[in-house]
Length: 392
Ligand code: PMP
Image (cartoon, rainbow, N blue to C red; front, side, top):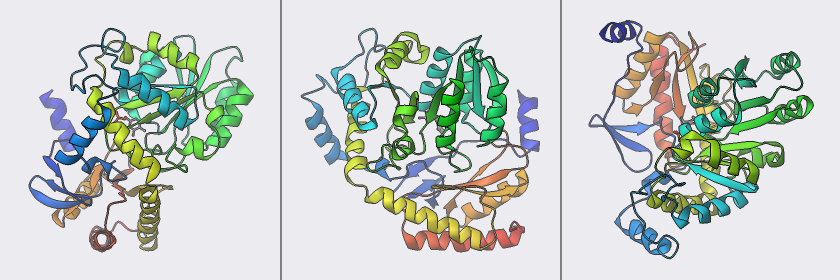
């Protein structure tokens, strides 16, 4: 282990933990230093909301539904952990997503691993975008299905791979809707066409689009009118919803199947009922206060335009996730350290999280970021980029 850690250090790939306290308006204390947070998934700033007053409100609101808003759910949902708050929430959330049913999982990671490993197996084939999230990749490995990776967002490559597989084999196409390290958007309409043409199932991970896109934050699939065409809709409550937990939405038969087959649902203690109550509170804000989504998208568009006009490479970002691609690991680390010295929490993302030679600073925008703070950040990025000769 020591040897491997040393090797990671030599490649500038060694990771470590930094103590972080979340403050207001996108600010944090990181190792005791105040910084503007450009590395958070709390896109709508909703994780900041809980304090003594609103926790009391939350408990009062939910008490009629949940007999006791416990932190410990005491067992798996299938044993004695199924507090009434779950099905009440799942039914309402499915109707919001426009699907027959929905099932809560403890986290997005567990949802992806559990779903993929249960719906496909050894004799099946899965087609996965090369830049899909690690939890999708781990689900595929667990499933033991044949894994065919297609080039990022390349539908021609996907079709080439689909053509080579026996028509009768069970097939799953799986994609992120917004890619977590690139901010690029999946070609969902074309994926639907291909899934229909080749008789495959389609699964979309809406971790980074849920709560943001669509009239009320139902996600990108809903916004494009494709809900009925996607067999498995996955999303998480840990990002725009500012909480923790995840869901799978789809037909009733899928949900019943997962209750019986998804091992990461069956063999784990249910999320605390108080966690579901918190999700419900933030979901209300996601649905009814869509000024946050609007602000987020406006601020993200401005930030991207500023970086591009200064000659930085932001890849194919079309969302609130904005990579500044540096390439070299060491230089990326230096970039991130210099920004942190200036009070900007901007995190370096290196291989193996991203492909070799594409190390980057991954900026994520929050609706609660103040314009004057973002302007300062752009100035700092410009100075550091100039100094390290990172511009195109
Ligand atoms: N899918 C994607 C695309 C993600 O980016 C993430 C989290 N980084 C997950 C799934 C896992 O979600 P969670 O953090 O809720 O486990």
